[in-house]
Length: 299
Image (cartoon, rainbow, N blue to C red):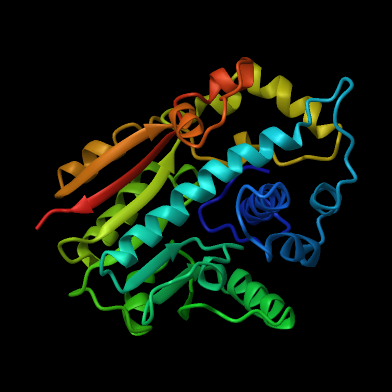
């Protein structure tokens, strides 16, 4: 189903289901000892989407004529997870005391990273998503390793005011992530999001995100063929219906013009930096220019 301006979702539908997909892949990475996320698999099982429960339970057969490759999924998500984990650890060990995770979904970093004492982690997402994760992790006996503060609001609403109301201090440096978010925003909303981040950021603040330079890739015949084959296994999310199409490569220029000093790397280079070989096939080629970016706001 195509997106609408004020559409809503939970963790089993629309954009929300992609959060469950991500945490399922993170569970594979954790099972393979590539990252350490003990909460990923329990969160997937709690959401209850059949294909992802089967995925984390090891009940989907690989090999044969299928394109299902759990090792490839695990390595790809390990690269992404390590990128953001290290970003936050570097920022907070460098003296930044407040962290903002935009569209936090089923992210458990507030519970699993070794945050420096006194770190405050703000999680911003839909009320339904925040409530589900909080209750589920509470039932698991999980305890935050930082001061966790939730901001239950749609990012299409006035989330900046809600963040300040939760105690965020715009006068102090902060570390921000927009993991798996940009592709689901219209072009103008994307720019507005980063303008809000800039207005709330003191000099020395840091930002991390990734983006697909051209979302037309989700209509690319190479991806469509892969999607159709994966659908036969139950992987039904169609990103072509969920993303907002258009060129995204101007994001870096947009931030540079607002005082951010940016550094970028492609997904292929990120694989190499983590000791993995980026795949050499049509699907990998279609997504080879996915870009991971970190930035520091100038003084």
